[in-house]
Length: 180
Image 1 (tube, one colour):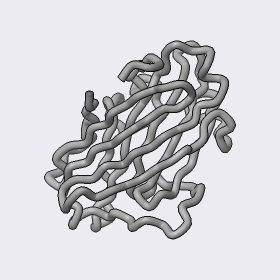
Image 2 (cartoon, helix red, strand yellow):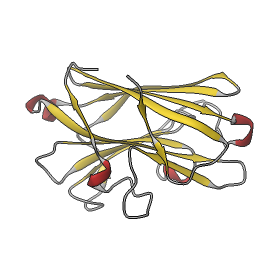
Image 3 (tube, rainbow, N blue to C red):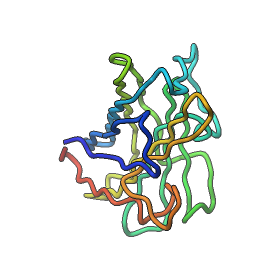
Image 4 (cartoon, rainbow, N blue to C red):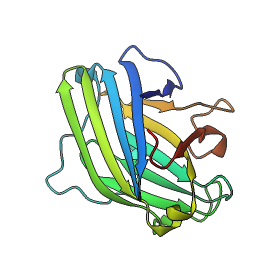
């Protein structure tokens, strides 16, 4: 079932953003579905060699925050329509950021279905640490840049009047292994 992401500040350029989520074995499957006016968006073409890159959030980027509810640490995953990506581990809210050793990108694809619809599919490998948990807490979000350079922020929810995707109160989706 698609989960709707909410706009921080609605724009007529973006009609909707949803995400389907599944967790099987050690893999987290995400499929973002975006309905928008792509002619007005900064939508990077596929990279010849997608790679790990910093600061993807400065442009169009889809994000997932993964945690166990019993710890303060979490993992942030960023993917761009170009195929570029990154994963970071944090010890607590915005503290101790380092390249992730707890998650890695298995696969990612971004496909424009037509001039108004796109699908971004992501598969994350969650190694052994996730085997101990029956449920994960997720935060789903996106930054979508338009051609004027303005960023539009989407998340499951926004709190404190800011588009702060790291805040654990925005990581409100609990998912159980094997359940869609």
